[in-house]
Image (cartoon, rainbow, N blue to C red; front, side):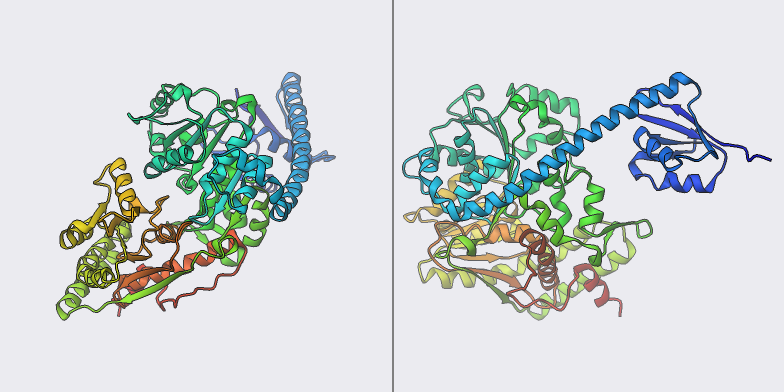
Amino acid sequence: MQTPIFVVHCERIPRRLAYYLRFSPNDQLILRIKELPDDTRKWSGLIMAWEVSTPSLYALIKRYKGSNKIHFDFGNEDSRKVFIQQIKKIEISEAEKRKFIAELNVKKEHWVKYKDELEKEYVKYSEQCHALLNEDVKLYPHQIVAAMFMNVTRNTLISHEMGLGKTLSAILYVEMNGFERVVVVTPNSLKFNFYGEVEKFTKSNSHIVNWKKNKCGIEDAKYIIVNYDFFNPSNKDRFKAKWDKLKIGKIDAIICDESQKLKNTKANTYKNFKKTFTKTIFKGDKISKIFLSGTPAPNRAHELYTVLHEISPTDFATKKYFQEYYCGMVYDYNSGWGYITDSMEQRFEELYHKIAPYTHRKRKFEVLTDLPDKTYQRILLEMTDDEQRIYDEIEAGVANEFVEHPTRNPLTIMIRLRQYLTSIKVKHVIELIENIHETGEKVVVVDFFKESLYELKKQLGDTAALHTGDQSVEERSDIVKAFQDIKSSIKDFLGSIQTCNYGLTLTAASKLFIMTLPYSVGEYDQVSDRLHRIGQKDAVNIYVMIFPDTIDDYVFSSIEGKRKEIVKVIDNEDYTSNVSESVLSDVINRIKEKYSK
């Protein structure tokens, strides 16, 4: 007796390249469907059918090629012909994609070789590059290399460490191509900085969106500068109306300064950015996206994904694959915390080589032999008995809250500890500043909490200037200028970490006090590099204020641990800390363990 043919009923889903599959229970077939890519198939319990994309259905059918035991039934001949036509279009598209990838791979090999050649032969491009800028501009070799590299790739991540002049490299790229329309996206605090750089280095016009003191209208500007907050609206129609109102039209390029601001794929900022800067907004459909960041992955390697996807969606197609394949991230369905990381599955060296055709990375020690090294010094402070007692009570309460409210935001819970510690550091900082004043030097102090900065201002008087969110962007710009002026009476720059972590140049000082460490490696480095930049003539000393065996110690240890992963991806080097690490590596667990005894 002949075995009956197993039938799979295939119903086309209207207006989609997908089908509903219905069939009698069959473990083998279900297993093969589950082997298809996750995003191309799903079970729909409401209609008791599998939803499978057309390409995956075709792949499934090919698995049974030559078999006379199974039949995929499309209902009628017309439906079967539609499926065949869809497959032919897909095969043509796939062939074109394979051709594109083959050509892209050839280009990538050339870009890497060209980048290496530029390092040796940049001198022959120096004269023509300098001719594009104002007469008094002095280009460093790495800036010429970066601009020439952008000129061939057009979509690039310039990952020079802070203070190496990434902005000028991007401006040079724009000028050498004769672009007429470029959108520049910056943090709010940096828009005046970029505006000033264009004015200083070129004869081109700039326009800051929603600034009343522009020297030209948006229609006459080559560089249109807008901050990331502009892309924040959650209502996409409201954002589109807001964007359309600018009447920017077609552009030659988009430049994103401090591009790590786009790291969150779920944030409105990135969603609106992605929808806006598609192929159609660029003149002649020639895409050019330039990303600038000294810390492109402030905390973890997976934060590179958004920028890399924007640069090459072919190489970095999906976030899920990027996280799992390169970063060793596996979704943990049991813990409730999302992804967990398996360090044995990380492929950071492979990722380093994968991004090489799209990135130009320079570190200070490679390009500025005359730039003094930064010296980090932990200033260990001592509490009074009363201060220790109060701290212990707060810390015990925090540990208890972790246990009783495990889903509550731990950063919110721990903020009381950090606020208390910064309040009792003020007297110590005042004493240290007074010692430095005796030498005639200027000082920078940064903190997360503006209350401590206001207390410092109160005690230091007219020699100090505040740079926090309470001051307008223009006021903060004036404060920086005054501090940088050697004739100014301003000797002490008191800034919040939130307003001091991007773009500022504070080379008038060589002493920096960090009262409360950021949780992020990127923010930590950004703040310290306000002093350690081009133009700095003295050795830079960075003093981190720490009470031993407190949350200060725990955060310091955590930051040093995170730095290891980032250095491996960006620089392809194993990390060696130049400062002694705390024995405590995890802030929350350390507090829990301390009070679980």
